[in-house]
Image (cartoon, rainbow, N blue to C red; front, top):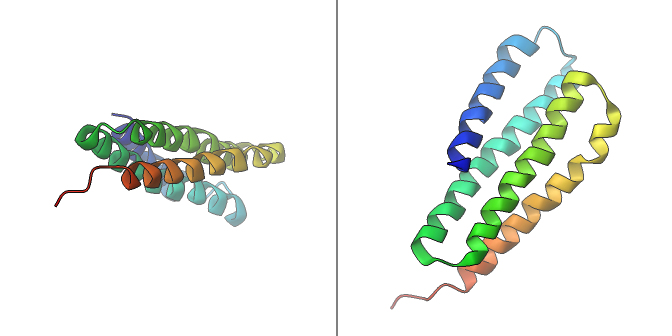
Length: 120
């Protein structure tokens, strides 16, 4: 459900940025907003992959990966959305925390995949 919600919101935010914000944001801030959308969509799919892997193999690391992807979306993409909309530069300082969440999620996904039973 988290993956679907992230994907839905990513499409909605992307449309909002393309149509409503193009006339109000500077090109630089529109690019910041679009970066948030792009990473949200990448990680919506990554969250879906983690959920599928968890259902298939019951490896707890896949659940951790999904949670890290979702938290990364909130912190990374959320801080970029707020930065673009408010111009508050201090928000850029918390964006890397979300990036670390994404990296940790990918690590957990790979670690979980490494440890699934190999079929013959």
